[in-house]
Length: 197
Image 1 (cartoon, rainbow, N blue to C red):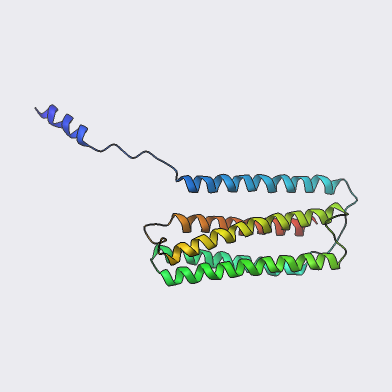
Image 2 (image 1 turned 30 degrees about the horizontal axis):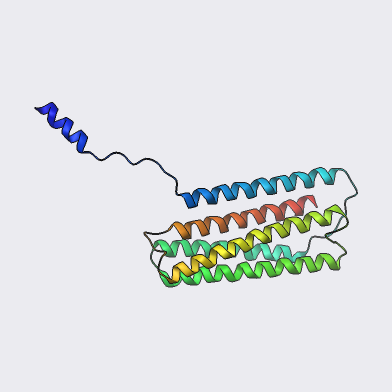
């Protein structure tokens, strides 16, 4: 009798949850890995081409350093947005995403000013490969940052519709991880170019 009771209890127990990955988060990480591979190939090609000689020496635009600071601050405001979502602080969530978006736009404007400064110093996309690489690095990062701004717009709309809250953090989590990744990627590119240009 005792054995039968234990067997019935065992049958009534719910099966353990299987470990599963959120498909959106999985796609995000695949996207991040593909971007990392892209920039790893770019930096490898840069080092190989630089070693061959005929390399133009130029001063990195100072605005790139200032834009780095802007992007670091935007990472802080993005993290603030995530913490606000966890606490259901909807006003702070909306304000933080908006500030992050504005800082992202300022960063893009500063990148453009960096290109203007490069042209002023006779560093062009076509010509010496040193110039070509800096435009490719900064241009590709700017392109991915624009995709990050689009992700922020969707998160902001979701925040206004109260779809982001303590029990629904997937969207803000994805936006935050992607934004931090773009910031870290820029830091890598900036210091790489600063050291190896």
